[in-house]
Length: 555
Image (cartoon, rainbow, N blue to C red; front, side, top):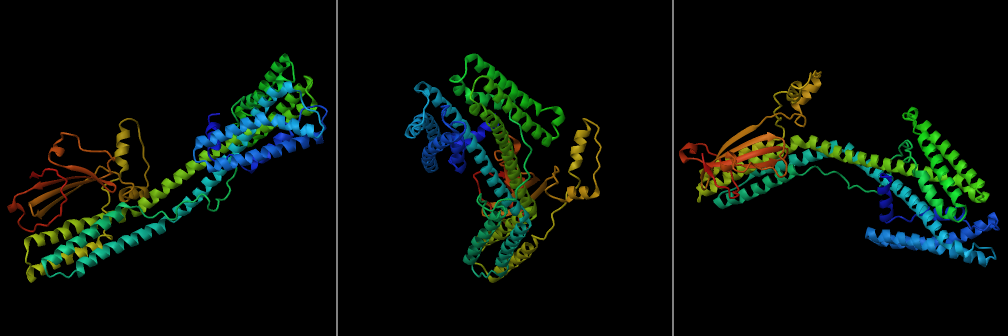
């Protein structure tokens, strides 16, 4: 019941409660379960009166369909549907009597009106909500399968997306290299303008490194459907649920048709027969035989319906009404089983869709990781070396001489050549298998034996997505700025920190003005220190720093 309730709630509030199946259910219920009761009516007369009443009820549900599709609030939709159920339960008995009198046919006594209304309310609620739940679950499965097909198609196109991403990244890097190589500047103002252009290229490379490759066309639930999958095994309803719902449905009719002792006996038989049918299909020997279990469930459910019909005939219920149990109880049990099976299938398909979306993202991430690392290295060269050199030149040479301009042009040409090779520069492999520390840790708690093939070992050493060792890279750079030389220290370690990670308050690193940031898939600990001019007078390289207000420390 827990698994069915979310599906029922979604069907009532989803805006598509009324479908073509609603009108089919109205017709079937009207001419069978809720057919006119007087014994004097023939089968044809019952069918005609029931069909005429179904036409009037269908008009009401057509109006409900228009209202629920126009409403945007789920609570309004649910209120409209509940109101329609109550209205039809109250209006159908007098409507049916009016149609019978119009044709000169007998009608039930007025004293039966309250129980007839209650019967209508129970039967319409069970049949229409059940039909809407099954239809909604089937529609959700189709939409989920369609999205899954698109995700799988996009996943298969991951290699093409990675190629396009790498080509675009190479084009951006080469454009930045061409800017440094072909720049023409004669005055300090030209150098300042070049610094602005270099900064724009560095930001473009950073943005491309941070953004994943385009996933392709947006997902559309109305796209061509995925191929039909093999039906999942029948999932049985909870034991006793079908019998309890059936007893609730026939209670109003039984109250006005049989004696109290017969009513108690009938309910006990319904619970015993229904419980036996549910438990027989759950025998341990059938646990791994879904087809045999489903066949036994069908047989025992039909037998339970025959048993209920026989008990009803023995209690004096007319044969036409008693025979409905042969159809009504199995139909109810099958509907509950189908509802549970459909709800389970929907959960499975949504898990498949979620897993496919995650796998698609992982495929793109693994395929572009090397390219994104190269983009970040290129952006660092542009920002720290090229832009920094231009800023330092503008500060040191307010009136630049041709010789000074030539030196700057040569430096930028060298940086241009470095940029051209940054994308093809291989990533340093890990020093050892990342599996080693894990095995060593668990080996202290239990005997652990490992069988790692050469190919797997090579993958663990060389694949940056699999290598997760405790390694770090330390970068030290002296930058000459307008405020004096600065020593920039960066410690890069694989594995991005959590979004809210920060240095421990009062720690030595924090007191020195260090910052912990995420750079792609890496964690970066960075600090800037002031140094003496004499220590960095020769060969210093400018690094354009963006101060965040952190006080600088002297190294």
